[in-house]
Image 1 (spheres, rainbow, N blue to C red):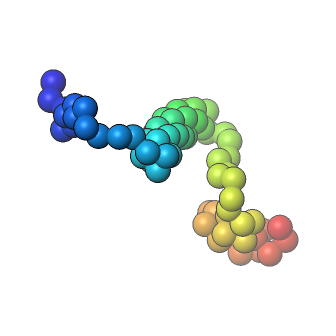
Image 2 (image 1 turned 45 degrees about the horizontal axis):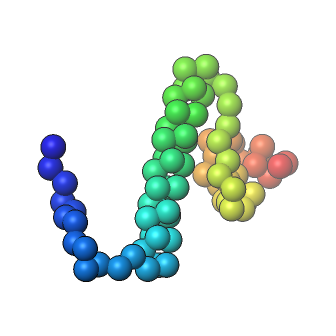
Image 3 (image 1 turned 180 degrees about the vertical axis):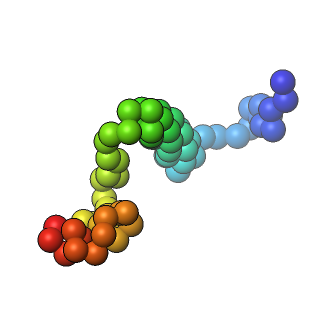
Length: 73
């Protein structure tokens, strides 16, 4: 197995490096959880996924509901 990184004992890890590594890790965890949930919804043909931070109008615009239902909501 190959790894693009190498050990360098002269390299000091700073706060921004740790934050970047945590951001990458959390992004990967989120992607795995989302993929798992989408699989569950797909298999059961029931459910909805709404990511925190999305505005209601954006969610409605992206939905497959017809125009009348969107207006009522």
